[in-house]
Length: 219
Image (cartoon, rainbow, N blue to C red):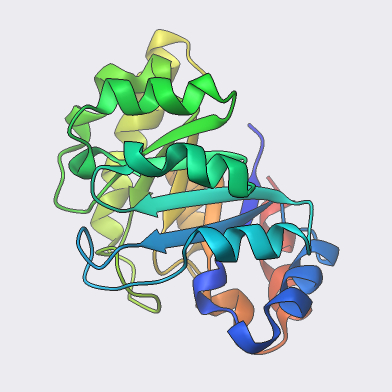
């Protein structure tokens, strides 16, 4: 299994975003996680297309774009053209999930499905063979800095078990409250793509990245 660390710019200092992106890149970030919020699907507004375009000029790291927006199929082309390498959409936000997945694939981009904590894991299993990644939210999406809901680990275990049962390699991403204090538990549950925001961007970015990477590299 290949493990990936994806710092979330939701917790970065926007006044020096380019510098902080360079710092996490140098420290070994595999992905840059970019949360897009529309104020409708989640009760917050974050970044838009122009921000993705702007930071694409700063780093060439894989852009893991998490669309927390209603009916995301409307924006797939825009975010692809802005520089997204992978697009994750919410099961709960799509009027036609199959069409949305196909739209992302038409641009030869990585496709992911995300589910909120209250969504039953069974809803994503039928789509397993169509996607590259499943994102399990371990907090309610919309705001950074929340405490992880560890009961979500059972969802991760179910997804990993089902993937092994059908012989399909899929990334399982975890987003919400991940830190070095619970990272081993997260990895043990079967996740391999780790999103972390506050625990990376608050304080010494390089030292924080090193702490995460030292745990991941033991796997």
